[in-house]
Length: 361
Image (cartoon, rainbow, N blue to C red):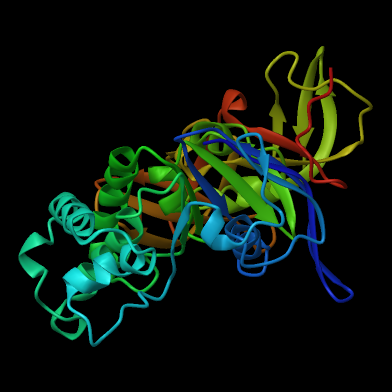
């Protein structure tokens, strides 16, 4: 079922936490609300669930306006950061609790519980109580309790936050698989951009109660709409250098005290001297020796080994540093003098004042 949010605003007294949110989540897609703490993503999810009232705007499930519908009438299921399992009940009774409240026939409850337990691979745990389960098993039970209802819309509020790093990696793949098994629209809230990138069909990046960009993972990573999205999406984060628009012959160029870079033909054409910000990801930079041609030269400040890769921080100019990602077997040490090559085809330009993507024709 499609979920449409039309000019949604939310205020708590004089504090406005959501501003003119316009989004449409297509049916059966996995959509993530991504942003830092306090950006309004959980509040928006709670409004979709009916747990928070809308100050202004319209929420639709399909063609039906649901602003005034109680949560129980929206055919949604929600999984919270807290497992919220009943400790005195077995896994079987926890899974079937919502159906018993709805007075579903016992035979139908047993069938639904057995089906979901098999999908989640917890059918051997049905007679245990939550205290006898690991964190990952409790998370599966919490998911299963929502799944047995066969909702039209599945809402998740940071369900992996309480798990250890290894289990989070496993559960990311399993959540994606569960979404496909559910055949429902899934709206997922997280501050972890890696979770969003690996699981989502679409991502809404939020900041300050405003949707900064809405698109596929490839779009928000490869074509960030503004400086906030560019800096928030990607690990390690994008490098930024502030400078001005210049020209070199008949080609536009980026100019700063650290770097003068001819840009790709047609990348930018405007008034020379305009303040812009150049962004480039560490993966798109090339580290070269002191004697090789380079865009920038500097001294290695620190080297971090990540396993198959190294992050090399190079000091350029006065106190400015640039991060370059290289292979783990690259020979580089602290205090080495190195060069960094910047590919004009791989840079992003932003307006220094507004932060918006800079595309001047």
